[in-house]
Amino acid sequence: MAAAVLRLLLLLFCPSGAAAAAGSAYVVSVRVCQSSESLAGFTLRCSGRALTQVPVGLPVHTVRLFLDRNLLVSIPPSSFLHLSRLEALDLSNNKISFLEPGCFRGLAASLRVLDLSSNQLSRLELAALNGLRARTNLSHNPWHCDCSTQEALPELKLDPLSLNDVICQSSDIPNLGAVGAPVLVLVEDWDLCALVRRQVDVVMLLTMGVWFLALVLFLLFYIHQNQMHARRHLQYIKTMHMCPELDEEPPEE
Image 1 (cartoon, rainbow, N blue to C red):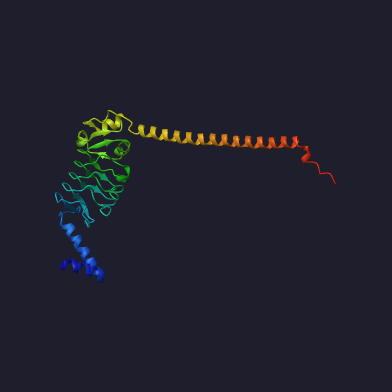
Image 2 (cartoon, helix red, strand yellow):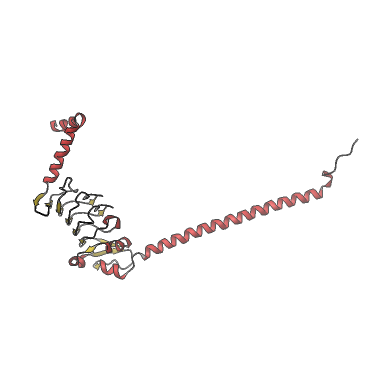
């Protein structure tokens, strides 16, 4: 209780104290990992620490980062932005089900090895890769093979040793999402974006049809209104011819 009160007082009355408190959190997050240093840079091993998020305050000279066997469920944007020298990143054996757009931002130039095996990934989006060209292990994930997967896979350099274990658990193409179907066979032999393109074409055709129908209805309404106006005008003219006395002046008394 006393520590909590002291922290609150620091936040309210002493900005420098708040910075120190933040600094202590930074130290704690770094101490979670075992570090070793070489001429190339730092190697940080944060394996099996029950982490639910990527640690903050990782040294900028980190070249290898092991976050395997933790409890990560997603990778937020710019999680590794400051690690411009990172060459190897191990995220295997977590519970990652979603890679947020920009999660690997800043790593395209340096990252050479990426391990995403044994997670809960089902989809792969181009927005999450940020031009990544690392040798990537995607094995042992419940992949759903769809158009986004087909577009994203060519952007990655998949680890050849893991290809047989990159399996499509399901697919957008009926009867092709059988368990045990290698993802590359499905992606190379079938156009998974064809269904999306057909859906887009159908939507465009329906939209054009609705606009055309609206135009036809407007023209019909316009013609009908003109015809009604013409009939009324013609009826008025006939009435005037049938009652010529209306045009004569009344006789003087």
